[in-house]
Image (cartoon, rainbow, N blue to C red; front, side):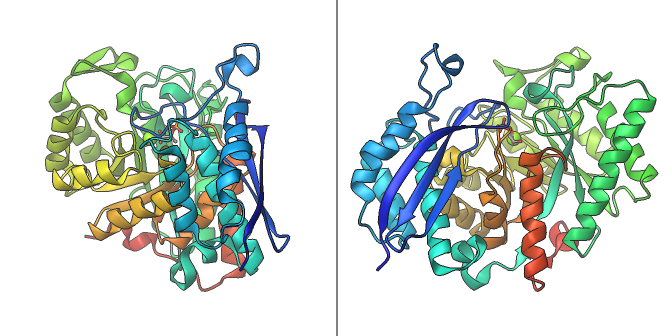
Length: 424
Ligand code: 2PG
Ligand code: MG
């Protein structure tokens, strides 16, 4: 039996320059694995707790020394000597030690770091890639990427209300080719923005963050870029939005500052109906607020048969909340972020529940990321179908795309089935 021999944890930096936790798990056979936990900016209220030191004298209060100490002083005591390959058991011990439903004591950054590091160490000790460890022989499909090429909302210092304008290369039968098209469009967009005297500075996820007239203009620029790069909008390249509307929702009203509009849920749904009639939009994430469940029911009624409606802040990778959504016929897809829920096992449970009920799954990065590529392997392991991991620029975003390219290079039988993703 291969057991957990040592758990270590230390502070490293994420892509925004904030500290985050890196956990190293060492096993009895000498193999080890590291994991770095990401961090969100537009976080859902019901996400598991990200434990920060709140000691203003270090890193403006954002240190994670307490989370590190929870790994080395509390979690290690319970996990050392346990069979390293029993991931479900390990994760249930983490839940048991914490004994709250949002890791309020240990911090989900501590528990997820441990959970991912042990999975990675176990893959090393079996001498198989992580995606195979997580998915066995069942993980066969490379995900369709959602590439966030214009950033707004709380990820950028511009006047665009919607957080993410993404392209999806759906009209290809090869991941590598699909990614190439997206990269070419990204560069073409930069050129077009330049020609129009618009800023090509980037936001947190590597997408451009120009000041634009309204929330529709980014779409028109992206369409120009798709065509100028030689691709067909709608046929080859589709558009996806993450509105992250919880960020501009208050007391039943959505405030679109960028265009000086105040809308109720119905008004915003109509706004989306217009947008989707005009443009090749295949997916809208967090179209309404996490607190607007009635609005969500209406949104799903109106648009659920036409496009993908993704719950991120709404479901926070939580099976209990997702089940509630399924019962109420709300949304038809879920964004999967391991650090919203706190362990690998709970992440897999959310994915299984979604698939069982016909909900699509998108494995996702956070706006604060690192070179860790766990989510790339996860997306293949569970045949997620989709992955969202930023623009094809900046190291922490490209680390995930590069990992997928590597998996494809060494596993020629992995498929890319984006063309079937939204087939009716
Ligand atoms: C989102 C994410 C990732 P954040 O809202 O989907 O793009 O952002 O990590 O800031 O929550
Ligand atoms: Mg989101």
